[in-house]
Image (cartoon, rainbow, N blue to C red; front, top):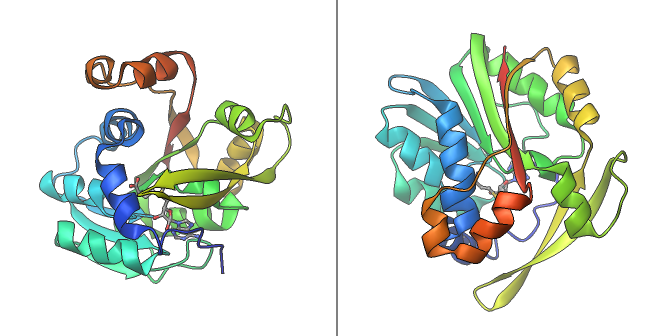
Length: 229
Ligand SMILES: C[S@@+](CC[C@H](N)C(=O)[O-])C[C@H]1O[C@@H](n2cnc3c(N)ncnc32)[C@H](O)[C@@H]1O
């Protein structure tokens, strides 16, 4: 079983922060939803759905959403946000879904929790219809170096960070890997890369959080891929 990090104990504080935090609301979310594109009538799997903010937005755009996550407490919050199906599941394990059950897999800021991407990507591939897409965001490996305080770009290794949430500290553990390891995992899991995005912050951030806007206009924080089955 994968390390849960502290999501269960911090579910409410994490969920409240994720809704409005500029890095989520005005940087990652607009980018992943743009990559998801038109979802009306599509069966979408939100892998690592957390508190269900993306799931609710996908449902509002006409998708039928299934969300999975390791954290029971975050899933409970996700269920209050939309009518999708939400299941507790560890993405390092085989998924409880039939082959070709989804048109789209979306995964926001989850892959950097996984030591090995290949088994999870193979499962995404299996549950997608032929021609289906997986879109996901993850830490930019350049950002990892800055945050972990190392110059080891080419290695694959775990590093730790602490997040202040609701007056307490969430301890996070992430996996760094270089771009060549990401592309090797796509190939080993049978996916072709169709789009690669290094997002810009939403222009609204310049007004609401000028310091974050300045940082994100210079420093790559996340990157996104669209993969085709
Ligand atoms: C940064 S949060 C992102 C949540 C949500 N996708 C969002 O963008 O608001 C990372 C999520 O990944 C989940 N997670 C981490 N490792 C996981 C695993 N092995 N299986 C399933 N979920 C996992 C956590 O419980 C948490 O909800």
